[in-house]
Length: 194
Image 1 (cartoon, rainbow, N blue to C red):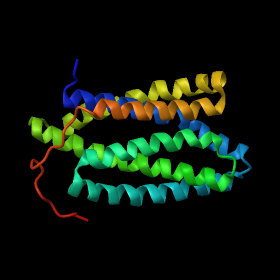
Image 2: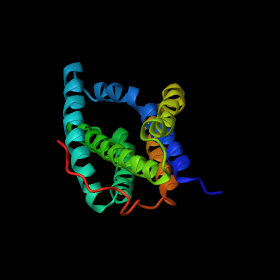
Image 3: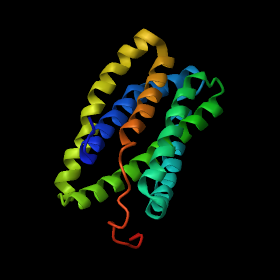
Image 4: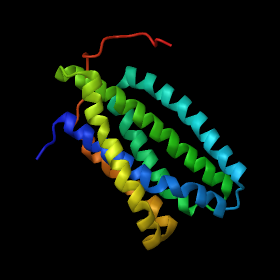
């Protein structure tokens, strides 16, 4: 059974937010267990946010030129691998770097999939606002079981299990997108607008 593009997007948002919600609450705990102070943990999150924002912006521009899926798939794969390396990194600087790469890949994935979603809605003749809301709700719904199950996974498998599960689900989300095709020639050429 093949999902329609819009159903595949809804399922992707569900899975990717599920995966991140599983591990997000535990990353500060892991950083503190590796010897970082609360202010250093805050610094890691701040640097990660700056890098993610810049990389997501750049990858959005690249996706305009090369295609949404050509940017999305490699970033999903790299992010899935990076998050699985997190628990095995004992050096705090290496751990912070791996987390930053993971979050940058996540940012680029969200930027690319958002643009692809809007392109797909345009191709389907659907409302951008309502249509995007119906698709993006999958992410909000995915966050709920993700955050609930993260604690159970940590209890059963330790912190390592939380990050491994996040990676497996992230990599699995890429499979859902394999049948999708680029929306070539259906986007109108626009300036950056910024």
